[in-house]
Length: 172
Image (cartoon, rainbow, N blue to C red; front, side, top):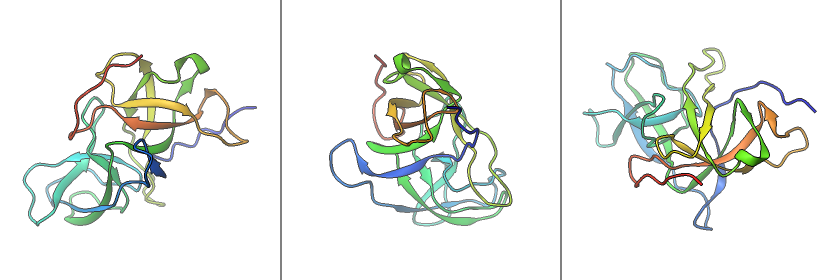
């Protein structure tokens, strides 16, 4: 069975590594000077000096620490309010370029592609896989669905290992 190529960003699963329910959503904002739009499902990082009493966020770049996952669209170069899920210990479903069964439990790099301007949905996905702790995401398992299999464009369950609020952990 071939998987569909449909990058859709990070979809939160309502459970965490700690065994409890998923993380609580927190408020944030994007400052007017941030020239990159934030799409629903984008990985985000802290965005520097904010203008409100909430965290300032911006789209995460490849090879950067992750703060959370954005849940509200925000146009580029516009001050916008957001809700995000902190990434630490949270589980997400996301598409990966290609994965084998032997690569599960290794680490993967963020592919930070611009989202869909019409639907306002993220196109973030995962790319290269290695055991180094310089990659952002830990692969935990294949997402359990009848239309998903190891190989190209598989969907996997992940958690961050390079969070802005936790220490890095090397892969297996």
